[in-house]
Image (cartoon, rainbow, N blue to C red; front, side, top):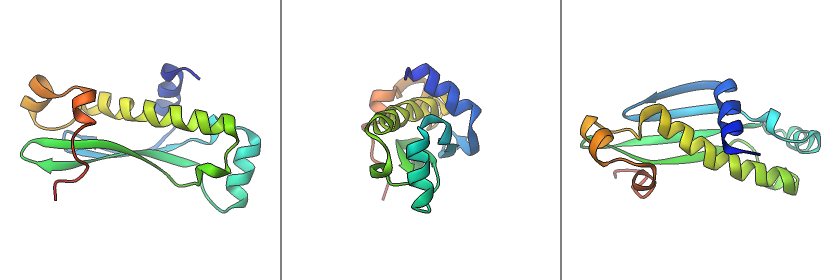
Length: 126
């Protein structure tokens, strides 16, 4: 699946999102990305097909690395759907970054941040 198509899917399937220059959380219904077999396995396990991204504020005008998470066990997915899940994880980080321009104060956003730099920052400040 192409990254731009996944980003479009993310945009259309946001359950909730609170994203600002101080980071935040993005929660997405990912059920439409996977096969019926994977969806059934996840549902039988009592888990939800919800995934997303999170970014913490480190302080001093700096937002940390964007991380991803899922509310389901990836091992329940078919091999093809595991690949799609990995592609989703990469795309949701980029999508989140694009939403808040990497986070942090104006100086960080305009002079310092790029996705590679941002993803090399710590997750937490303490």
